[in-house]
Length: 249
Ligand code: ADP
Ligand code: MG
Image (cartoon, rainbow, N blue to C red; front, side, top):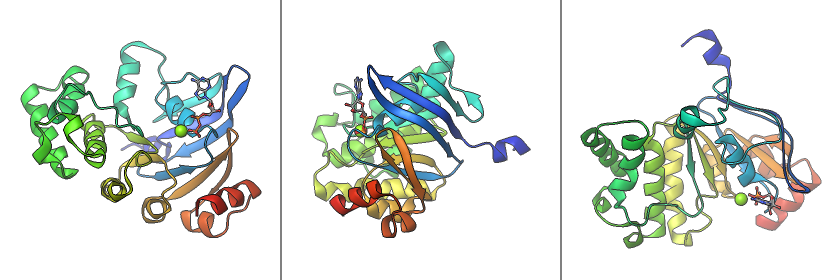
């Protein structure tokens, strides 16, 4: 590792702004995520959390400011953009698995198509990853035959199969039945402990306490507050954060 890569944040947003028509959804966002860091993003519905995640893997273009991955500006198009999508994994609230592909195929598809991994190698790695998230025995089933918690763990294995530099989780447990939340969070805590760089939009305080290095609180498109989980949950500074926490805790 050279000196710059040891100090360059993995993700860096500077002065990022984004509008949807008249709606100013991201306002002057400055944010850095270091390698191996787990950042939890919390905030009321509509505050811009999903847009922030989508901007980081360029599912949403931004109006001004810069976003860099590993010191390089995000590519706009073509092969470089496809490569970016494999460097930045994404796990959504709604699993987004391919319904007509088996669990195993869901995990091997990206590596084979985008990374040009040999099928046999992709399959072997997929089985290892499915084992890691505890669903190896479901490999030949279709997503609909799995529980929500199992599907979300497959989605995590699918993201990992691309060897991403960072994984963005957008409310990964909010569509799950309560009894399945824990099994997905456990997998995420494991990834965090293994040193994966993660940006996690979640209101799961238990996860934040266990795994997050830092919590950022968003409201109305701004980063209002940043702190350690301990500081944030016990002693929020802003009125907005206090208000929000009093509603969810
Ligand atoms: P959060 O994830 O914090 O709930 P979002 O980033 O999804 O917030 O949305 C921020 C704001 O932008 C909301 O007011 C939402 O309605 C609006 N918004 C999100 N996506 C679009 C879109 N594609 N077109 C227009 N408005 C959008
Ligand atoms: Mg959202």
